[in-house]
Image (cartoon, rainbow, N blue to C red; front, side, top):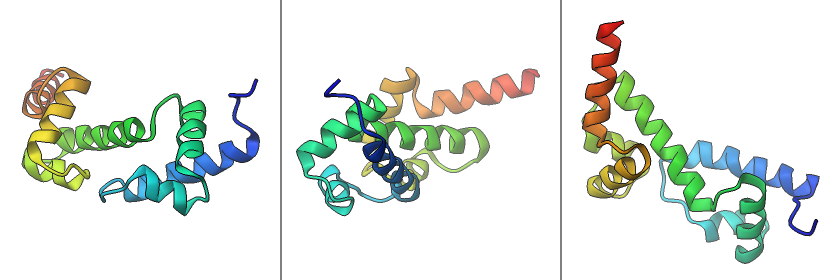
Amino acid sequence: MANKPTEYNRQRIAKVIEYIEEHYTERISQQEVAQHFGFTKEYFARVFHNTTGKTFMEYVNDYRLDAAKELLSNTDQKVMDIGEACGFADTRGFINAFQRYYEVTPLQYRKNVRKGSSAS
């Protein structure tokens, strides 16, 4: 029972998630966000994980990758521009993260989406 988030902490983490959604394009750190919302770094890490099932950085990167997937599907922006627009520090890091998460490169993903939509 000690690991179950309280309603108060769930509300605080909901505000953190809103913050992530508004700032995912920027460089954000767990330490800064914890401080901003009045948590110690260690307590924040525990509460965030217990509430979301993910570490802070897993959550941020998953959100960034979902945003990138949308841009790859719906725009003709260059892969490097999409990575940067979604908060990744460099193109190689973006491509590696995308490939680990979706098991295809961003360019392969875009090609697959385009093939699928033209077959419909």
